[in-house]
Image 1 (tube, helix red, strand yellow):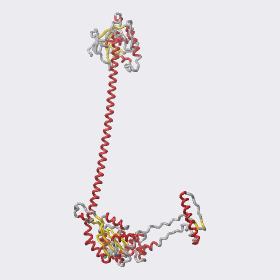
Image 2: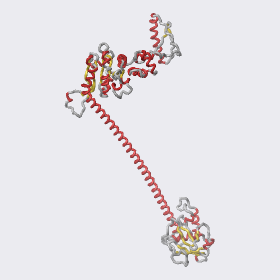
Image 3: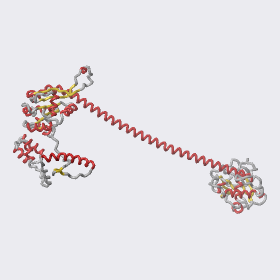
Image 4: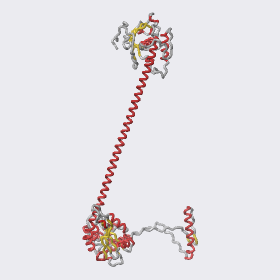
Amino acid sequence: MSHLNSRQRTAVERLREVFDVGEEKCIQLLDSNGWDVQRAANAAMQPFDIDDSAVAPPPPAPVPSRPFLAILAFPLHILSNVVRFLFGLLRIPVPQFRFSGLSLNFYRPLPRRPPPPSAPDRWLRDLEEETGAYVRSTAVDSPGEGTLRARHTSESKFLPDFVLGPYDDALRLCAREARIACIILVSEEHDDVPAFKRNTLTDPEFVNLLYEHNILVWGGDVRDREAWSAAEKLQATTFPFVAFLALQPRRSPSSTSTSSSTPPPATLTVLSRHHGPQATSPAALSTHLTTQLLPRVLPFLTRIKDRERERERDRRVRAEQDRAYQESAARDRERIEQRQAEERLERARADEERKRRETEERERREAKDRRERVERLRGEWRLWLRAVFATPAATNASPGLPIALRLPKGGRAMRTFAHEQGLTALYAWVAAELASTEAATHVRTSPEGDVVPEKDAEVEVERILERTIARSEPQHPLADTQQGEWWGFALALAYPRTPVPWAPGVKLGNIPALRGGAQVVVEMLAGAKQPSHSVGDEDDGYVTEDSDEE
């Protein structure tokens, strides 16, 4: 491509963008069509024929009927269509009825056709073909860099960046973006229009001004409805016609009294109208833009854009503040929920600790009540035993087993038992000695309701105690204690210290440690109440190793 000039190279590049062919093919097509891209593109499309050999041949066209038969078949066609419509609603299959060889088809869909191009789009294509120029946005790869003069040679011709679409949409876009709008209207019936297209619309200085200042350009031929409507609104009667529009402060009698801090309301205003060949020449339009329109309009549009940017910045700031507030509220909510969870956990722990203390307190009270009941019951038994053992036993005068007793509080007592008496009698006597000295001696009925006769009282006491200990019921206060703990104390020899555990039916004479007499000490069991009074504090003549204890 080194032998081609810039215009020819541009034509090759544009053709390659449309068709994926090589450079040599593009050069041949352009050279054979006078380097006209449009004609070369049309010529390039001809070789691409569709191979439809594999497609089934179309059905033969129906034989046209005679006019007379067509008139007679017309009512039948209407009736057939109604019947097919009703049967179609009921989803009933309908056979094909034929009258005089004519098919009464219910519906023949029309072939789909591509939508026609809009009037501005069609006008722009015709303008490109007529002037040989192209819209800059489609001819330049990066429209944001440089200007037309800097990027292209004098042979390049470009059109303004026309906005396609309805006229009202172009005005709304102009007002929304605070831009200047350039409305171009032409009529092919005027002789000055072709020169206007070739000279003004492709003038580099004019087109570059439109592009540099981001001026919105919309155009059309008044033969189209959109362009005709625009001409009516702009009161255009002479063509070519160019009008410039932009937002301007609304003029009203109260505008002078309005505070300067409050921006005046803006409305879309026609800034200037240009009719005829002289007023629409490129020099006249460029001079008007640079010397009059732009200095007068741009400051106000700049303020509008600045206010819009400020509002947008305020919206972003408010959005960021709202987001920060929501994040802070979410963090506060999380902290509150965490604090509430901790408080609930603390309350649960406190409730659990309170229940534990209440349970322990209840268990202590129950244990205390049980101990008090046990001690009270033991005290009743001891009072009864003290009443029974108040009188000297008959065995005191006969030879027997002298037993010296040392009480927990230092008191002493002595009694002689017969060899045939049981260990229960010894424990009963010790329990009687542990009772209060103020106990009445006339209590003859046991806590279980047993009455001891005067004769053989100690023997009867042994039988009553062993039977009572053996039959203790579960609800009895002493039921959960061992039989040895029923008494609340234990006996042991003073020296050497030898336990003398209680057991039912054991005779004193059969206990080797007690033969010939002995000195025993009372050892209170854990939880048993110490006696507050004791008797028999006289010395019994025995010397033991624990005489200094207690």
